[in-house]
Length: 438
Ligand code: S3P
Image (tube, rainbow, N blue to C red; front, side, top):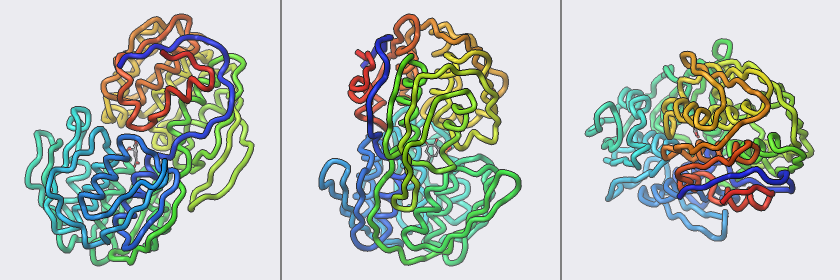
């Protein structure tokens, strides 16, 4: 499904962004682990999260959709997951598969994990290695530690202390989730702090979690095994990673004025906003409140004259999914934007560093890759006129559609179907705000 975005009027109006993807996955997983019924409001109904919902059913939960965004899950209970009869297919979702591997690894069951061509190309060893240390048997795996993977979890996983070699919330979460089934304390040390939704939700469901500082930018997270997890009522805040696209559109399209409501405001996710403000973006917080252990805000965003900035590598974990759209925004800024320390972008739904560079190239935006850094030489405008290959990657698709709303010539993407993994109503929502996408 190709799509083309063209320059039209300003982006105007009010919008509610769909539920946060990271929190939606975790809400279902914790619902699976608690005995009794958890209620979730505002669940993201993107394909990635729906795959996790289905997987929870395969492992013994009763999962029910009561109304749009409103779900009930009756958990199987920690220690009582059932062995699924068939392979669990996570589609495009790295978060779903890696977190669920952690859970299954703490149960004496055999599980086969699989996914689409993009997910089959992504590294799983980063999760399988620590889980093997905890006693999981890796029965089968494709070359290079890829999916499909068959594991047999441990009846009594060893509680370990694990220092992750990669800054990844998925790796951290997989180890902590397996550690829930272990007798004793499991600890994860991360040199760079990554998103902390697993830790927050562990506490919210009643587990004993301790977090302390580790080094300049890192953290040590400890969870006490075998807690009693009580079912909860949760409201999922709006996803800042999805909001990044309309925010980008409002900044780069002249005379725009947009209000976005109910966005998650968690410091482990706000790197893009920090960066945009440094670039001179007119972004104003107009309300703030607490919902289910997270803070949410309403933001007003207006068309802005932006300048290039230097984004430090330690900020990467707090905006890891936002670099493609930042590269697009940086094309419309005056001067160089230097994005440092992007090695993890190479192992996302696509090699995002390569996909972004190719998209900029196709649309006449001057840029370079130096090692793990991306430099966009912004000139205040983007020529456009190119076709972007999206490589089964929703964020590449949405980022370059935003470019087309402000570039001289239209921007076409080859395939918009993967947008449904994280933001099913993206195109109608953007159109309702004034975007020309057809
Ligand atoms: C996520 C963690 C990040 C992020 C992904 C969601 C999560 O991946 O890119 O979209 O929910 O834990 P890594 O932990 O591999 O960096």
